Image 1: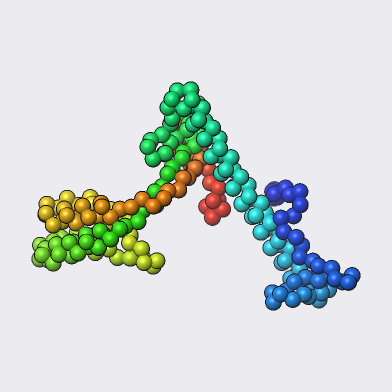
Image 2: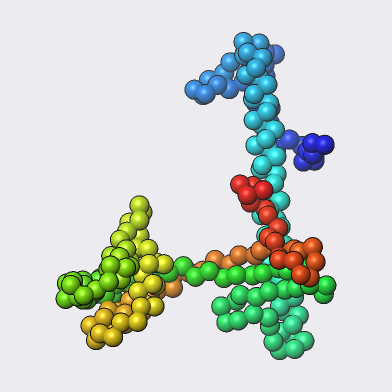
Length: 219
């Protein structure tokens, strides 16, 4: 059975305009066209588009309302815990997990930091370039690849953070290399953060938690 989204009033008007007793619709050039001159299939297509986009707008508003209400509920719960026990759930960064009594449902709050690199990164690049030139005959191809990829930029001209962090995991006993890694650490700046709420469910205690999908593209 096809389900429709209940609406008290349409999210999008039907586009019809009455002028001196005659009904028009706007055209793609900003003018007006008498409805009687518009092909039937074009009117049907117009109705279809308005219904779907209207439903999407209603869903978008509902998701925004859900997000705001969820953060308010979590904030109220945290405030209650702080007042009752002088404690809160989660770590320093704000990541936390709430679980139902039966263990079948979870709400997770995840805080993702927005990072950027300061000018120290260019110092690190210069030092790693020197290391590569000196190790040219002895360095393994996979290490050269990791170093090269770390300082390549993407389509937006941004450094690939994941590749840079791979460098910090390499165990290389070289004073110049260690100075380069110190420069990378000093280059890392936290410029903001985004908080996400994700919901999970599972059918039984031995089953894996599955996300409750709200993303239209993944539904």
